[in-house]
Image (cartoon, rainbow, N blue to C red; front, side, top):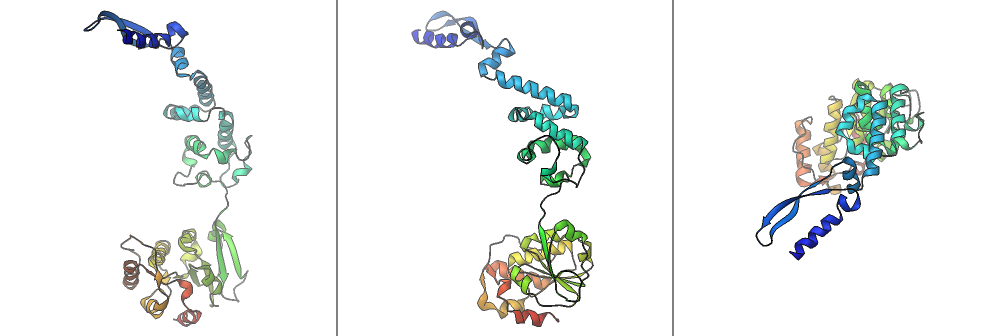
Length: 332
């Protein structure tokens, strides 16, 4: 009985009766087997919201939440559903909602797709604020901008049609008769809208092979940079050119070839054949493991070489093929 009373005393000492807030103990009279009839706690009740919040030490946080939620709802009634679904987001960004709502206001009133870099936004916030709060702003702007959002895009800049530091595509003109610079690097968007007056295009995986590629009439060379060939898609002038891809003789080189044919089905492979592979067997090295079993856009011969390389984990690097072997192959 003494132990029971000690435990009960601890509960009473922390109750609203003693500290002025928190839970109220409601007793029930019970008959116990060892101690007879006793008044024991039957329920612990928080009678008011304040009692509950003070007990949790969340009063200030909740008051801030109420102010922020009210402000959000007043400025943008269309965010009511988002508020209901994401109350803890409101808490997470406590103290920053004036700035967040200012950015939302700018996007809903002054935003012009494709005009601004992130740092050029004229919303009254620090220039890095948007960069630091992309996650929550994406959620808010998806609701506020609706159909104007590119929901398939992964990056904030793509999603909301902002300008950004684009990857560069490097191009060499292989014919001195072609007008323009000999070696240029263009942002992806400018590359896609440009037009190089070339009948043939050679896309190369390795940079040194790109730089050393010999002169070819009416042709240009493009440094593909491995899987960065994705930057070359949706380019009208490439669709009408004769395209050759030359990559490493390994499983991943053929994977890139398959990817490129997904954009331009008429792409030919260059020096990615069994004759070249076995001619330079002394230079074979170890490839990178690959689990993909079939590349649907390869020819039967290409797929046979791909399977051989993949199954034996072999690699013949592009730069180990002598220049004279390339020069001899080009007329064919």
